Image (cartoon, rainbow, N blue to C red):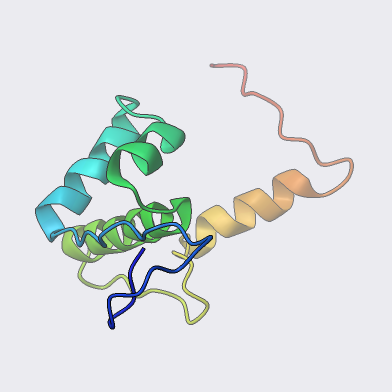
Length: 107
């Protein structure tokens, strides 16, 4: 590898050019992941980006869908999508010791 002055630097690997992806490419990657057409490891290798970047794209895509489908939806301060209070209560009730949810007789 050569420095700006044209000198060789021993022991360093040349850096790969950094690739930036547009919204359409990111959406295709997230949809490929969600549909099962690509595995996380295949996407990271194919796109040359770390899993953390793809994971961030996935979170932003989910947030965008929730906002588009329900304009009243607001993301929690910690950055995690919130569940409706009714669903949170059902989960809390199901997780209490001795309060296992039984399937209904009609199911």
